[in-house]
Image (cartoon, rainbow, N blue to C red; front, side, top):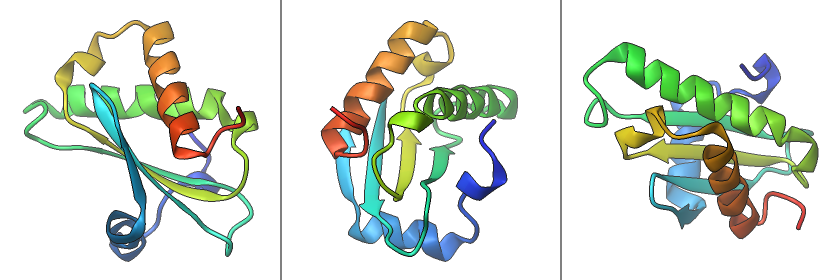
Length: 116
């Protein structure tokens, strides 16, 4: 799990990223990012809809896997960004860890959040 300082607080800030952020779409999830000069570190939110999985256990497991993947890439994040990962496919639940990490890394690089 990521630390408290890297989590979003309040729906308004999430809505701001949805409206003004840039999107990088992949096969399993989309990443919306936006630079945030008011902060010293990144903030991350993972959104998993009930349409993806009816089971809260599955949705939370997907969320935890993505939080852990981004936490492992934390040292490569360039500057403070607001990052929202929107999941739209349930196969993320059973995807191998290496595949998940490479997909997240690839999309974050495309968004300009990670060092190249």
